[in-house]
Image 1 (spheres, rainbow, N blue to C red):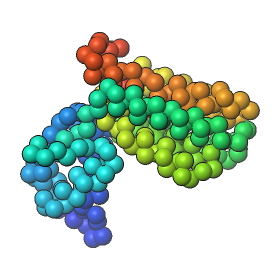
Image 2 (cartoon, one colour):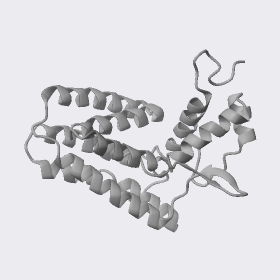
Image 3 (cartoon, helix red, strand yellow):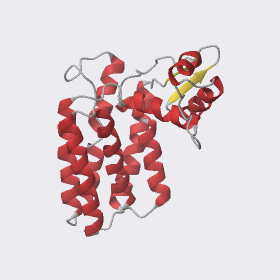
Image 4 (tube, rainbow, N blue to C red):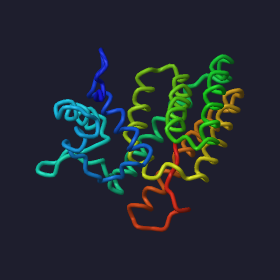
Length: 231
C-alpha cells in the first residue's frame, strides 16, 4: 500500500500536517496528547523525516508544541493564554468587520450564502470535517470583505491558533445551532448599514468556545456532555 504523499508531486510533510490538523480540530486528538514520531510514521506509512516535517509545520502554526526531552504534543493552552488569544481575536475581528463597506457587494453576499448553505448541510449531516472546512471558509470570505489582506491574514492566523481550543470537543449541538443563527444574522447585516452590529455579532460569535474551554481548564461543569463547536 502506498504511503501518504506517495503519488507523484505529493508533499508528504504537508499532507501529514493537514491530516493531524483535522484530527485536532475535530477533537480526535486532545489538548496535551503526545504525537510520537514512530507511531505517526507507521500510521501514515511515511518516513520519520516526513513526519518531522509535518510536525514542524504544525509547530510553526502554534498548533502543537515541542519540549526538550518530552517530544511533541497537541498544544494545551493555559487560562491566561486563552484569554489573551481571544482578546486579540476580538480586536482583529471587530476592526475587520468595521472596515467592511455596507451594504456589501451582492455577489459577495451570494457567495457567503452559498458557503453557508454548504455549512448548514454539513451540520444536518453531522459531517464534522465539512463543518470545520465550510465554517472557516465562511469566516475567511466574510473578513476578506474588509479589503485589507494583511488584516485578513492576521485574522486567519488567530483562527488557526485556536484549532486546539475549538476542537476540544467539536460536536456540541447547541453551539452548532448558535453558530448557524449567527451566520444568518451576519449575512442579514451585510445587506444593511449597521457596521457596529456586524462587528458585535462577529465578536459574540467566538465567546462560547472561549467560555467552555476555560471551564474545561478550570474543571468547571460545561453545558452538555461535549465541548465547544466552531467559531
